[in-house]
Length: 157
Image 1 (cartoon, rainbow, N blue to C red):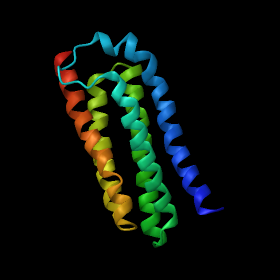
Image 2 (tube, one colour; image 1 turned 180 degrees about the vertical axis):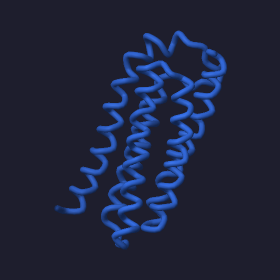
Image 3 (cartoon, rainbow, N blue to C red; image 1 turned 45 degrees about the vertical axis):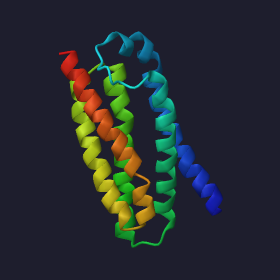
């Protein structure tokens, strides 16, 4: 398989997971999210799609670098497992927050996700520093999302 095809498949995988996750979000934004108390600094709803799409593309490129850059089997396996783990956590946050409407549990899950992303960054850096840097916008956005989630939880208790 060519490197171009591997890259395309890695990006497709992460974007597809994000798209499926978005299905849990889409209907609940108008039916539920717009009805709860949110802070004045809450971004407009339209911004989330483009931001997450860009982040999933960066994650896909990172994933490609994890599987193609030279590294020992144990280093690659650790990065691979952590990457997939944080991706699964990312997927379930939308389900917990938007479908189950469990704002508090979503906040807890975001804390675990944040730690998983940080561990992934450190593991990926052992393979490729540029790949690790590709995850910095992601952990930054999740940090912001965590603060937003906490604030929404406070406003709706």
